[in-house]
Image (cartoon, rainbow, N blue to C red; front, side, top):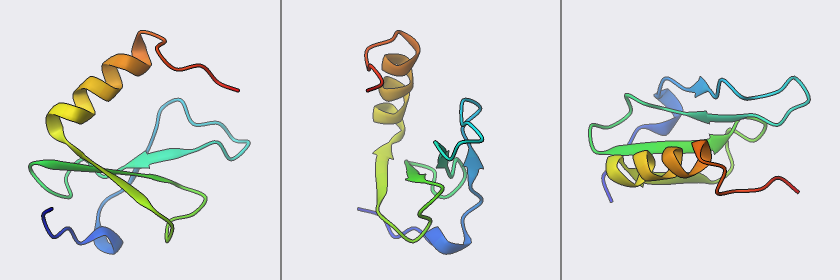
Length: 70
């Protein structure tokens, strides 16, 4: 896995994040081949690292409704 400077990355909240704290953010420019994703309520918590291809597939799955909210 590549070394990524996550604390200094430019994080962007999802356009679908709500004011109720259900926020996901990503760092699109942190690394050319890896997209970090985290819970904005817990910036020091775990971070998912997607390859750019995996991230594109993840976004496609979200957009087609493949995941259901509980």
